Length: 187
Ligand SMILES: NC(=O)c1ccc[n+]([C@@H]2O[C@H](COP(=O)([O-])OP(=O)(O)OC[C@H]3O[C@@H](n4cnc5c(N)ncnc54)[C@H](OP(=O)(O)O)[C@@H]3O)[C@@H](O)[C@H]2O)c1
Image (cartoon, rainbow, N blue to C red; front, side, top):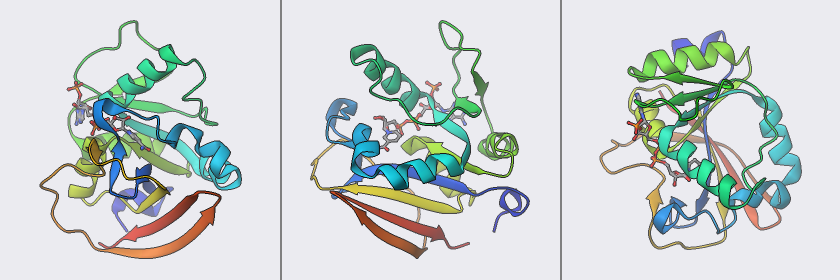
């Protein structure tokens, strides 16, 4: 376990993925099911949200969520109301008092957000941000909701260049059309 995880909750990379390894389709499209996870796997989704104490979010994920919310209000609702940390080099316009902006060293950002999670898990959102965390050995678990679709193109689970990381299966469950896979990251 990392130093950041011993006295705290876990650092979890949590995401919906197509069977061919994409977390968003071409043009950041999210119309293939991930925003309906609460319908697909309501119990698991609620349990996972309840175990989450804070979120660390990449700026592109934030901007795509904003766009989706503008196009379809309520479409990115998530049953989570804890602290949110946004990794970005640019201020939000307009500012959002519910979000803390962090920039720079990923290790410090994870430590800050994990501390704010109050003993619960820290959820990492965004492929680029997750890859930075994986590269630095900061991730404890990966939780993937596999949806029954091949997207063919889009945003991959992780950007090219991430070195091999070995995982240990924790669980595999099925809820309706969704297969939920949980892995521990070997360190
Ligand atoms: N399927 C799912 O469950 C799921 C979950 C999350 C996201 N997604 C999708 O994934 C895509 C976004 O992922 P992504 O990999 O493209 O981007 P991302 O990880 O969300 O955001 C990357 C951006 O965050 C900022 N950033 C990253 N590290 C930083 C640091 N250390 N300091 C300061 N700023 C930092 C930079 O933005 P600036 O320099 O511009 O500030 C960077 O370009 C979207 O399509 C989204 O919908 C899918």
